[in-house]
Image 1 (cartoon, helix red, strand yellow):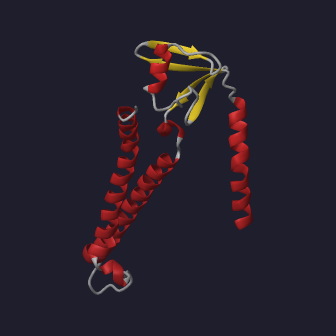
Image 2: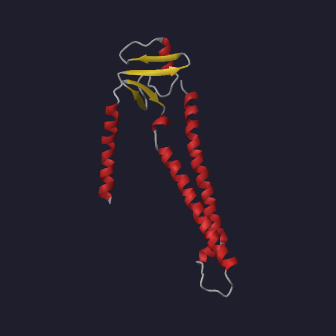
Image 3: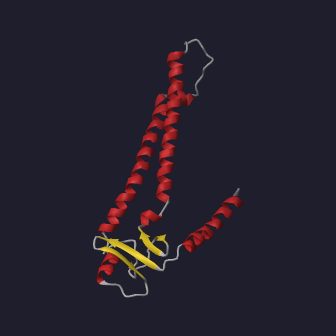
Length: 173
């Protein structure tokens, strides 16, 4: 088990190198309200292109990409930090998935509790609940509360990606 995990982590730099090798940035494109500016790092940039680069957090001060490029041929556009990272997608997806699973668990416990207390006869001992299932606050309320909390957390993670990009753009020098 640990061997396969180690092997998969050792493949990550190789995959990153292959992805970077596909994108050769001979020229860069910066888009702003003043227009599109296609430039090379070796040439002197006009003032408008310098302004575009300085007002965009995805670019380094020299005009290269700070985070990751998206290529169209050999002309690259730099993406912002939130467009390049994948961890918040994973975290938000896991939170929402766990919330859905806990909601299903709460519905299952509600069904069992309802069956025991309302659909079986008091003298019928064939359907038994565990001790923790007898208390509806623990068996139904707790999973339902965590389900709502995790789902809200997942949605907040997804929405915070856009807020972070807006904040980063506003705080750019």
